[in-house]
Length: 205
Ligand code: SF4
Image (tube, rainbow, N blue to C red; front, side):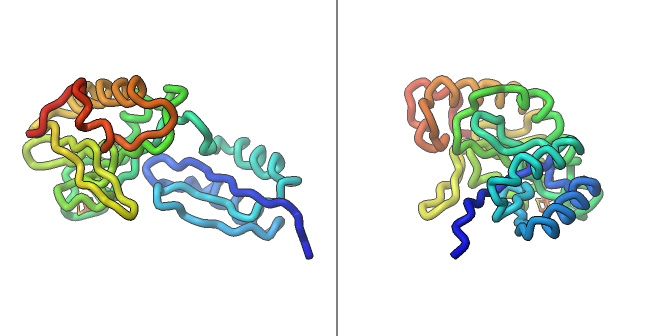
């Protein structure tokens, strides 16, 4: 029996986009080391069944191409729909919106686990904005922001805390929410459990 220890590596992808050079290298590594390739529900790329003895080799090959890896404390990259230009209903460029979020918050360290963000290009909510910790939905009349949604075995619909707001106002709201989650959370916490905290900073609208 082969009892070689194996692990997984998750490459973080911005707005679900897979750079061609990383895709090519992942294929090469998968063929070389007999790895699996899985596209995660958070739109990242996971190499599965990585023998621990080649872990550093695999990571450094991908890191040389600019790959960033999932790890403790990292701020979550939003899950986005394909958005304007690729979907007829799209009102906004979701990739650009996600990039703005990552530029504003991506350097934060020590983000607690179980914190998910979603951005939808219209009210159809394809990426699950109402079942994410922070959900941002584009409408013809500005953005709506939802907090405290979750999936899993006991799903919850997020509470709407803003409507008809601008992108800049969304970023300000997110900054307050991110700080609140950080301050109120020891290790991991879905936002849903914080909605009824007396200090929760927004009303339902
Ligand atoms: S949320 Fe709207 S814009 Fe985004 S993929 Fe779905 S239908 Fe298209």
